[in-house]
Each structure stands twice: as structure tokens, then as C-alpha cells.
Image (tube, rainbow, N blue to C red; front, side):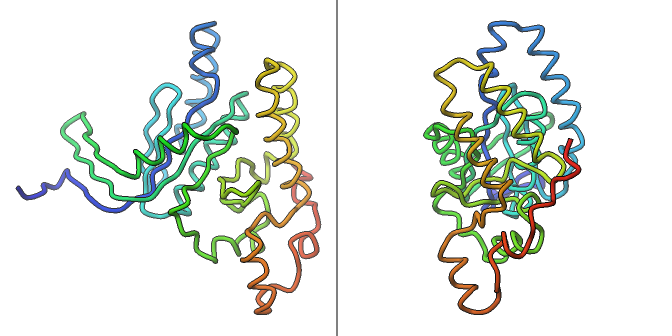
Length: 243
């Protein structure tokens, strides 16, 4: 059977993300949570029009698919700091693999081993982060963008032994830490560790730590492509205008 024009099969990056605590909040206070979600949706609407990715949002689940790792990661980054602006954290996984989908009118059929792995990865994560699967080979130029654009603009960071999506932006850096601290004080004691991890990431980003794999940093220092660490090359003044 030949594929029709509404059918697509290729390798894709698939991000599956979960808005933490959303389901519990819906059951506890539907109307207040719905109002917060409406505000979140209004901010997300412009993101849905991004070229190069397909985004689906189902209640507390966000699915992002695309053939370009940088665009998928940038989209997940935007989703992350929009969520934090609305007092929510996101956890997720990004995997790469075979992906088939078919559109039929208003319906979408999908079979994806990348989605299966990203769902499994998200379920295994105990921290509020979007983690990239080990099968994903990150191009060196994406790591080097850390030097070209600064610690807030780059979409992927290496922290705590994991490759993760950067949840911060240049205009949402200092304030992100303040918001996470507030949420930690309001959270139940059993969730405190998650916020502490997030705040430790915020400190590392705000202090302009390298946040790229050590072997990548070492390689380009030895080759002379890089001559300084990020902290030496870029003074920590990028967030002076954050609100």
C-alpha cells in the first residue's frame, strides 16, 4: 500500500513533557487551575506557530516533534520558562528515532519508537528537567553556541551528568530563581528536593558555569578554538534587565 500525501514516515526528535503537579491541582481546585491553564495557553499559542516543529498539548502533557534537534530543544526551552512564569515546572524526555504519522481529517494516527522512548525517559526522571536520551548525538556546534550566545540563549546544557534543555531565557533568568524559591516554600516537604535541584541549576547558569561536557571543553581548548572558559570570556551581566 502506497503512502498518501497525509502520511509521513521519517526519523524525528520527539519531546514528551509533563506539567508537574497539574493533575493533582485539577482534582483539588478545578476552577483556579483551569484559569491558570488558560493563561498558560494564551502564552503558548504563538509558540504553536513555530516552523519546523509540530506541537500538541493535551491537558498536562506536551508533545513536540521535529527533524531538527536545535529547533525542538528551543521550543521545549520556551515552553519551560512560560510554564515557570505561570508557577509550573516541566519534566520530560527527548528521544530520536523512527516516527510515522497519518492525518485523516481532524484525526491523527501516530506510531513512533522515539515517542515510546521519550515517554519511558520522562517517567524515569525524578527531577524537574527535560532530559535528552543517550542515543542523541549533540553536534559540537550546538555546544559551542554556549560561547557564541551566552548561557541563557543556548538551548541545551550539560548539568549533573545529564544533557538537558535550558529552562531559562535572557529575560527570565534572575526572576526564575525567585519564582522557584517561592514555589519551594509553598510546596509540600516531599517536593522540596526537586526545587532544590532546580535552584542549583539556576545558580550554575546564573554564575556562568561552563555547562558543557568536559571532553568537549577540553577538546576545543586543546585545538585553540576556545581560549577561555565561559566565565572568563563572558562576564556575568546578561540578566541585568530580567524582571
